[in-house]
Length: 407
Image 1 (cartoon, rainbow, N blue to C red):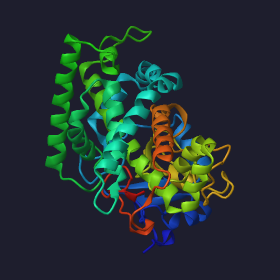
Image 2 (cartoon, helix red, strand yellow):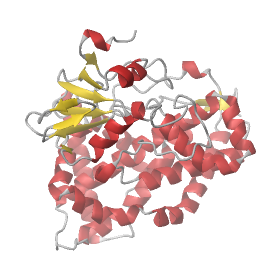
Image 3 (cartoon, rainbow, N blue to C red):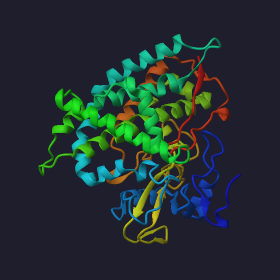
Image 4 (tube, helix red, strand yellow):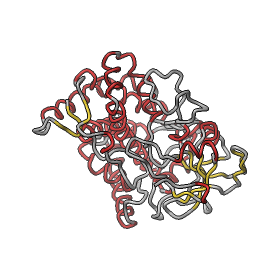
């Protein structure tokens, strides 16, 4: 059942019609109520933005900050320390200075470095597909998310950070806890945080004794132009942030990408016939994704006007990049997937100085997986109707629980 925004504050996140379909309210909110009052899982209230220009403005404006630990900021999760936005992980990084922290990491995520990583990513994708094909069920079906979508990004980010990917199940459990919205209790979250912190602190000590050619080894001794270094807590927080963001979001996106492309057989066949469409197709699925999760919250530390509404200092704003990516004012035929859409200035990775640091890595992984699957399994198809796919529930991120396929 859809909510009527005219009746007052909307419960957020909004209900989706299906695993791949957007909430029914998006179009009406963009048209009639671009700054909408919402009630978060915590019970706190915030303002929701759904128009492209508004979301881009707020994500880029220095008056709208990441200070979700401010005393009057809305709490995202129903748990005091649940949800990555209110976590000490983010606070530690903020204390390092976002700009300085990003400068120290940026060189590890350049397009040039990602190009160098691609052969390894491609080889691992082939290996994972081999395993999926060999282990397919008697009816010829397999879970593409479990066999490829999840393990590939974990392997990539673990290799980049110099941590063993054999611990991937632990990373997945800790990540889910840190991305909690409504799924886990306080004691579970606190235990996961403590375990994750101890794990990375011990790993950093090992790297100090035996440094490798990896990001964490480099950050231990890295000095910024002002002579500053990251503290131990900041190094641990960096490892946590990259492990969580580096595998959770991409693993979910691989599954959603393949589901969107296979839900309409014509899309997949178009790509099989014209491989030059792989890059624009990846950008289009990023834009078209209706199930990315919570959105991006911002804390307003100085009054700002958005679509004729003044948001006073102390307001918590939730930017729905996915709703903005369906804005007809920004994209012709926004509610249709156009594989060769150019230009495609979507907001899937955010905008402004805090846009996703790892977007080049995510793009490389998505393009590589798609290329290899087109090569290896051109007859790939969904093993269940698209409307039977099940969403991930109770987390800040959006995704599919599984992706049954056959070929």
